[in-house]
Image 1 (cartoon, one colour):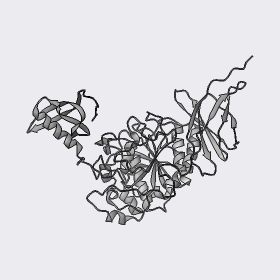
Image 2 (image 1 turned 90 degrees about the horizontal axis):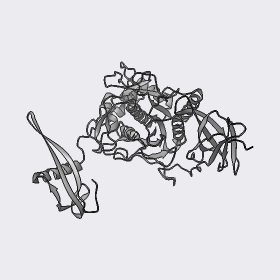
Image 3 (image 1 turned 120 degrees about the vertical axis):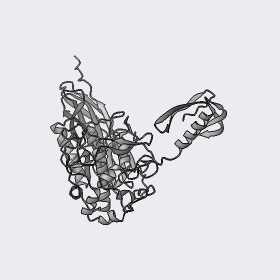
Length: 491
């Protein structure tokens, strides 16, 4: 409730109360106008003067105060065992005692806002700037994180595995729910670089894109996925919400576990893409409104990928000896057959991995207190920051040459010694979006300045970041530089 410092009246709220008597229902709309000052009465965070509130009827005042008292109480309708937990036979993950070491899920998304359901997020990082919150208008990343790690706390719903640890990597543009190819590339790169520090075992890309990849983009993304798998990371991606179309980016890349959306009976969701390797709940999923905390029904392959990533993280936490290939094989081996394809069956995967005792010994009823995720080893480094001092943000100038307009000169003014500069050029295609990517790596450095000359057709901007060749320092923040027109030679 808004609190004003002056004596001007304001509207406390308008509540609709429905009273049912048999077949008849009566709706009462209650309105209260109050003046605020620091006084005696406290209602929902606002101090109201007792004689400063005017109600249309005296019983309206009682009902409004009673309604606010009810709203202040924790919600008792929290769904502890969600529909997705029942359909995937994952109820035991809510009450089972977690293992001593819990692997993290690196979530490349729109960022995460801290709510009661996302309080256990281990870290929040951005590949573009210092804004680590949810920069999406729909709070997409916050909803996805809650689907994985929301705890039984009388707020919202419960995630597929409450003890899970989530590392949020924001890679979207501020205020947008769409990703570009550089967003996926740099987000996956950050997960790869932070894997050893945060104990990351699974990378989740739950936001797909309908943009097609060029040969250069496909090769660069395939190399990045292969690098993550060599480090021991599973890469899970949503199949896409295109209503029966082909797999979207990045689910179609080799080495990515694509997940489609299916109903509890195994039939494909109408909005899901086809061709995914695994199916998971994507229709009528019990989710949490990231703003109000109310339970909502969610549809989309985003939920299917998030549920799969949480289950895969749990499997690899109880079996830390598993690699990416072995973990995916167990997940597919334990899946049940359905009309849409192999449907996620968490208990079956655990039994296939020799973890039947975890399934059988987990308490069947009753929520567990919110778990406290284990923190990284105390080595003097902050929990929510990279382990070492980050490389400086690049200071770059990109210009065209006067004699050869098709050549670009990229000049670095602060390239550190022992670091490499990665430049990604965005080229405008036939449409209006810069969706082509060309990667140029500069490996040699100088103490004061370095430069490179590259050939790029119709480049409109360049994305630059520094990487430590010895992998001792985290990657720098990203600098985006627009490429101006060619300079005309003076006569």
